[in-house]
Image (cartoon, rainbow, N blue to C red; front, side, top):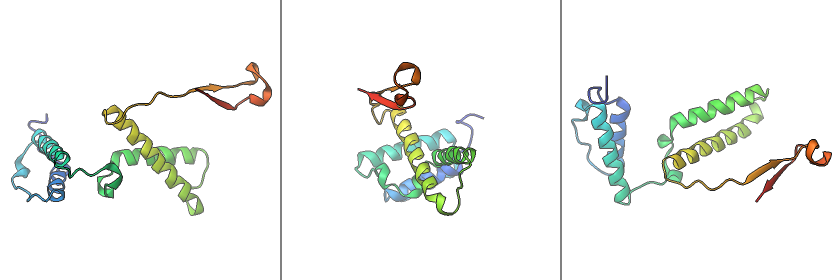
Length: 148
């Protein structure tokens, strides 16, 4: 079933209603009968209207309900997997560092998504050189030097 025949999802319809409420618009009925493509177009128009009218909400002031849930879930899963594979405890006093790592991972994933969407420029990476005992003194082994 393609987007022209598939009915709009409940998430799409809920997002349309939420955008309309945030913008102070009276929700217009009749969205229940639209297909997925039409719902996507309405969402795009509402987001564009919100951005051009100066009612755009920046990412750091978004309420928790507007967090990219899939991205957050992926960050949590990856951090959880890494912590468990290293035998680290997630409960008790250890949960705060885990939370900080999940937030940092989510922010990294968000930055990558913004670069891919063209909302942010990719800065040139600094060249990293790893020293080893074969190429220099043993004291430099495993130390990282950042070059220029």
